[in-house]
Amino acid sequence: MSLNWPTLFASGLSYEDFLAKYANDNQKERWNTKHQAISLSEAQKSLLASFTREMHVLCLAGAWCGDCVDQCPMLQLIEAASPNITVRYIDRDDAPDDLKEAIKVCGGNRVPVTVFLNEDDQVTGMYGDRTLAKYRDMVEKLGGAACSTGISLGTANQMDPLTSSVLAEWVDQFERHQWICRTSTRLREKHGD
Image (tube, rainbow, N blue to C red; front, side, top):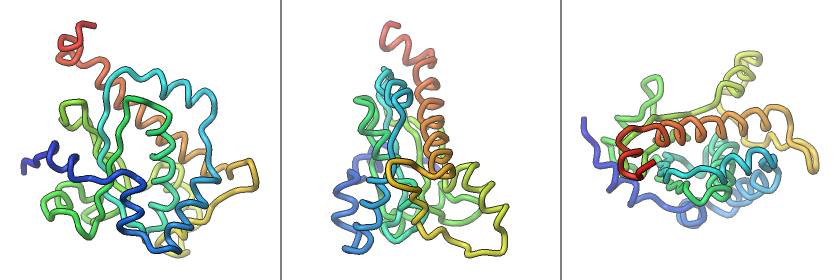
């Protein structure tokens, strides 16, 4: 199956536009509360600001989803920290069927799922629906609810350890894909570096 990644990426919405279109007031409040409760470290900000290759990231999400509440604000922070990262969101329920089929996780239409693209909208990889730290936490608590509530916030001015680990893992994914782009022979030839 061959997807038209440039068209799909162009059809995606910014973080703000996605929430304006798909989130109700309660959902907007949850996303905003999470966004206010998280922050990048100075080292993470410095790393992200140092990226030289343009990256496009397409995120299949749902405003109603607790895992999206937990993680999409992290993607927005990462995007804001780098002039070379652009994240676009597509609502899972409005997504084209071929996209949903292509990025299933364990046979299901999970969210959030990201597709990392280079500057030419060629796929460098996919990541989601949860990070390793989140899955480790879930395995330790097996028997509980099947879906996150999206309310792991920590205390004032300090993220809880799980949230901090999940954010670090997302930064690692962005770094990995930046280095894929940075070391690409084709892109090095294109940019003369």
